[in-house]
Image (cartoon, rainbow, N blue to C red; front, side):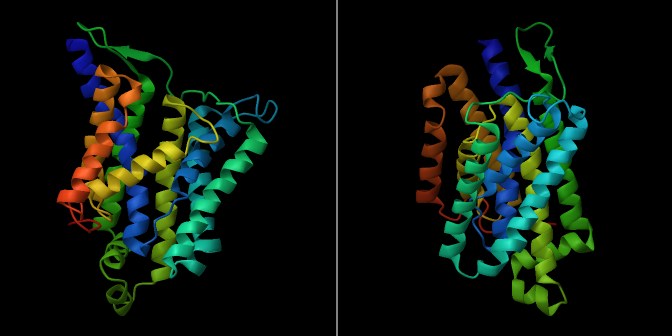
Length: 296
């Protein structure tokens, strides 16, 4: 029993940190532009497959790079893909919520078909950036180093994002735009530049999450569905547009999932998350932290 409880506490904290990255990128885009980007899951998939393409010899012949460099490349590729999605499509249609919603869904489906064509439908295994596991003395729990690295990288990324948004002029312009686009423009903020940077940041976070989710779970053309559903649940529970809410809700959902996996089995994994989602929608429709983006 002690081993099971420790597993829930430790692995729950580590998966929750990765879930937070997924949700923060999703909620940032909504907070600034009011866009529900349903291609966000596709960006996570791009991160995983960009890492696979650069680090696995079986993909493009024998040309490979070290896993650490492949990780950086995956982040850059995903960030650029996110920017291209905004600059090439979303910025031209974002005033029409329904068209934007449907277009981002179509982009996600298109990305799925492209991955099917280039990599096949079979699940793929990513090389771990950090191989091996840590044994906790006195108990039987072993922790994969990738969980530890994912936790550390996630919180470093969240810390850097908090500093950028709250302590730099460019970051404060993102915060101002999330509160009032008209007010931000009246103070001289370039709204197009702000939205472009927001999509770049969201893409980078998606790339980080994609590599860790692809390594710890599975990498397949359909891998984007689960992270997108998790991101949506988290941001609704935490409050759409709230980074703080996304972090708190990510830990709530992460621990609930780990608890059900440990004590009830995989068949019950998503039930408690949906129960919490329904409860929040009924009792506090604006989410735990309401409609906000960030705080000083």
